[in-house]
Image (cartoon, rainbow over all chains, first blue to last red; front, side):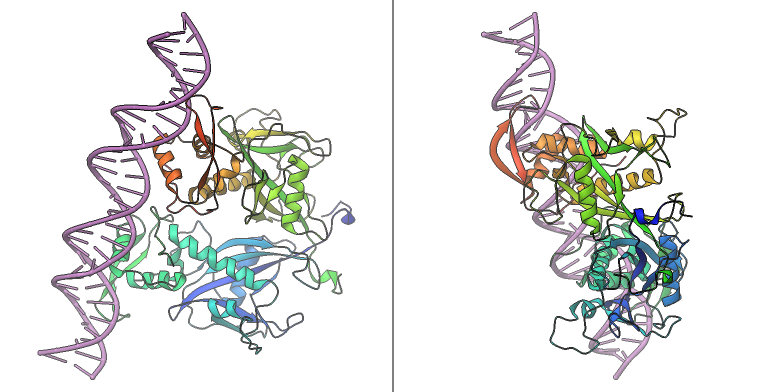
Amino acid sequence: MSPYDPSAFPPFAVTVDLVVLTVRHHALCALAVRRGEQPFQGRWALPGGFVRADEDLTSAAARELGEETGLCVHGPEAPAQDNGAHLEQLATYGDPERDPRMRVVSVAHLALAPDLPAPRAGGDARSARWAPVETLLAAGAGGREDEQAAPLAFDHAQILADGVERARSKIEYSSLATAFCPPEFTVGELRRVYEAVWGVALDPRNFHRKVTGTPGFLVPTGGTTTRQGGRPAQLFRAGGATLLNPPMLRPEV
Amino acid sequence: MSPYDPSAFPPFAVTVDLVVLTVRHHALCALAVRRGEQPFQGRWALPGGFVRADEDLTSAAARELGEETGLCVHGPEAPAQDNGAHLEQLATYGDPERDPRMRVVSVAHLALAPDLPAPRAGGDARSARWAPVETLLAAGAGGREDEQAAPLAFDHAQILADGVERARSKIEYSSLATAFCPPEFTVGELRRVYEAVWGVALDPRNFHRKVTGTPGFLVPTGGTTTRQGGRPAQLFRAGGATLLNPPMLRPEV
DNA sequence: CGTGTTTATCGTCACCCAGACGACTATGAT
DNA sequence: ATCATAGTCGTCTGGGTGACGATAAACACG
């Protein structure tokens, strides 16, 4: 494959790292795995791995996501009707010092998934957990030095922060928040997603008016549910509209 | 640097490619360079090059930008007062087939620059030109086969399209459009930037009200100019505000 | 030297939409 | 029955935008 002098360019290792977000118990949570090897052995990190020699970056991210969570993905063009997760490229991190072993460029991806029944460990023996992003990002700030409070390995805290910020801003002007919901959901459940991701409280009445008044955003399925308690709520599926115009306004502060 | 078995992971070449945009003659233009080597010899391509062994991705992009245009860059945190260009990471392209020679992952960057006096060729003998993005993206669609109309090399048409879309959407909600302007500019000049990037006509009165009414967006320098003809216009510099809230609304169609 | 052209700038008005909040409905828990 | 919870419909008000009229200050003509 390489008729060129390999010394003409420096060799890199290329990996994908995943920011997998979900909403659990009214909190935005990310998937973290415990490292079994040096460096950062025993520390929490984002799931990820090497891109294979003949593999697309997106494919590698989807493969890693499947290995870690069992989720299938639907691309940015899919109708978002299946129970797969949303997956998109986030950014690429290539500081020469980011991995002490060698020069590694990591193409980070952002995945959004509905609340999964059980955080499942990967094929290898690593343990995995969902942790509130606040916990993962605040790690290392306090004085505690136990393994739950240690900061994420490598530059993964930065990657996680960037992924969270991407998710927070993108649900403003797109229908991406529905990726956090099961295939059928209520307006209240969708509102609680926004509240968890943004960390704010939204007016239920104005939110209801906004989402039901935006054409193509939600399509009623006809069913109702009382799984949240209270009066039965209409069930919806995500509509075809991917862009929210005008956007949902994130309250200040 | 590598105490690890190099055969444990597949080697990649990592490059940076640049989408350098400017506004010339009321049109959004991108910098293109003519390739001097195979593959795609003689075809137009985006400027770019290999990331060096001990170089950050952003540094590599800034270095390439300087080599191609002589521009200095100010990062996303700079006060945007110097006459440098804006530079940010765009996306990473890693299709296994994107370069026929070998496995290359390219971290594309987006640069925005004011209209430069002369498109300058790089240190090597390649020729460079500013071309309207419509021309570069429409290339290959027509039946003509001369070198001006041939599509961009590699997947650079996709990269350019992504960069243009990023610029178009980002000037909606940020003060990024000032990166296309000289250090001092008038409201009308800024409006013509929006019009060129979006390809629409904006109402001068409403635009003036919007930009002058947004606190921190523009700061008057006290001077005036008539370089655009007509009544003298106030000169402004970009203010400290980087986010535009509420955003500038892009007209439909 | 007026007149027209160009660009900049200020003002007005109607409409849409978001925020604030009242009112009512339908379920389960006690 | 009563309360708590959650959902849904309405009303009012203020800010922001689109549409557009009017004025101001330069230059290019004849």
